[in-house]
Length: 225
Image (cartoon, rainbow, N blue to C red):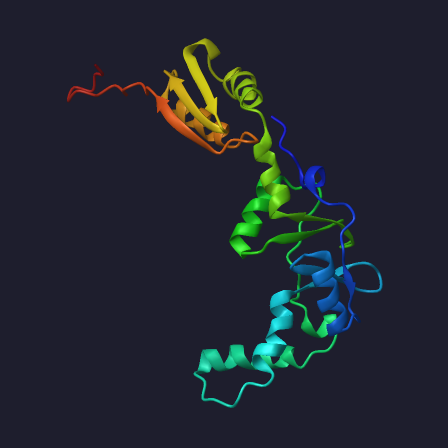
């Protein structure tokens, strides 16, 4: 069962800025390129951070704010924001270290990373940390364009076959939603089939309609019936 990797869906001509890019240059390029963030590269092409619209907005929101009384935690956060607001280059404004991903990681892993970190785009870097691409949320969602018939075929031939008898099961796929029916030899096999089906590329969700075998009940004498 082959999972799409980041290099299969990423953009290979990513837009980036250097550490010395000015505030104005970054703002103009964000608008021109219609993106919300750029990777920031050092002189060797390595990703050192990410500068986003939010980083630039700090200057507008915080720099001219009147003095107020802050709580301890809020004061620490505010102090960091004011430091960033004083920045004039990408190196000053960026969030560092950047959250990155390798080209051979799975698209599923990229999606989980974006969700966990609350970010929209991931710089893709090689082993030396050099930028080789960008993967966005829209790139990740592209895997759900897979035809239902293709998903069903993979579940039947690569998920069920070899683990259980395919003729014992019914697999229905509609808009990426998989309904799995049948009677596995054991509950463990059934749960494993459902788990593996959920990880098939293009699957939105799996409805478990399997009829699980009832485990034998031991009598007081130790016999099973």
